Amino acid sequence: MGLSSAFEVLQTEIRGPHGSQIFFSGLSDITATGLKSFEGVDIVWCEEAQAISAKSWKTLIPTIRKEGSEIWVTYNPELETDPTHQFFVTNPPPDCVSVLMNWQDNPYFPEVLKAEREHAQATMKTEEYKNIWEGECLPAVTGAIYFDEVATAEREGRIRTVPNDPLLKTHAIWDLGWNDSMSIVLVQRSASELRIVDYIEDSHRTLADYVMTLKAMPLNWGVHYLPHDGFSKDFKTGKSAQEVMEALGCTVEQTPNMAIEEGIRASRMTFGRIYFDKEKTKRLVECLKRYRRHINKQTQEAGSALHDEYSHGADAFRYTCIVADSLSNSNGSVKPIKYGARRTVA
Image 1 (tube, rainbow, N blue to C red):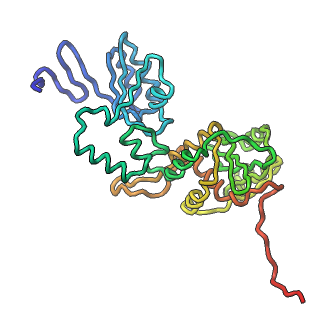
Image 2: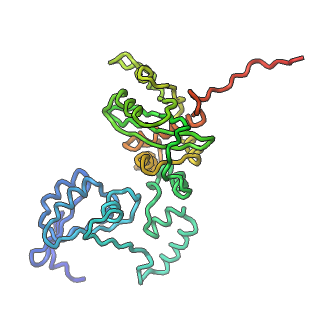
Image 3: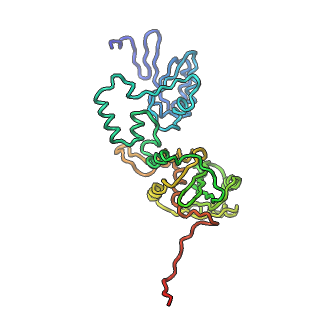
């Protein structure tokens, strides 16, 4: 455009006429604190903003406080629960203007992109097409292990208000943790239908504390299922989680020790029978939406399931699916029938 002589391009900024400056900065949780020196900025433009964390927004927004200053945000949404989408679309501040802009708004939309869009509409998953071309949120992150299952649950209305049925036993399926999250799925079973009525996730709390919390809930308690490590004695106390919980009046049984990939397959087969309470299991559903695999940086191939802040809820959900057919509304779990030797009666 013939304007290069008016600007001085440096490594982290561009200096222009009349003392104008353009700065470039990252917005990760690590680098966001450095933005506090930007209090005199007139305009901030955040590109690809769907990846910006809540912590970074809480640092940036109060920093841009010059009279008449503005924050411009452009992004293609991923999940509805992402902080950027929550801050500016779901619960926008009073002086926020949100604009949904798609290919239809481009008066110069070329034929080559028109053909590409039509091909995408015919061949892509509906949810992915709507995200890429229509700007709608995804049901789960791209590459999520349960992407299709979560999408189907949303379409079928299985993430909704799920009332507690006092005539049904409520079973607690545990994924144990201390520094990592303790995750507990509370589930009822009616015939083949599974109803997840509540979910607890926390850390640095004792088993007794969790049990007291559960006992205070007005539920018809059934069995507490613990993973195999819940039956190993703690070297500090000499007692296992099973022994502690049984001493507190819980009926405890062991979740079958199944390989993770086998458990994921079992979860996929069971997913279609499950209803989630929209409010009480919000965190659990978020974990399932974000549960993904390691991606090899060189080959871009998916590997084993990623262990992160979302995997604990996903593990508790997997355990729930593993024991699904053992859940009973009697006092105890369903025991397999043992048949004796076949006899002929004369």
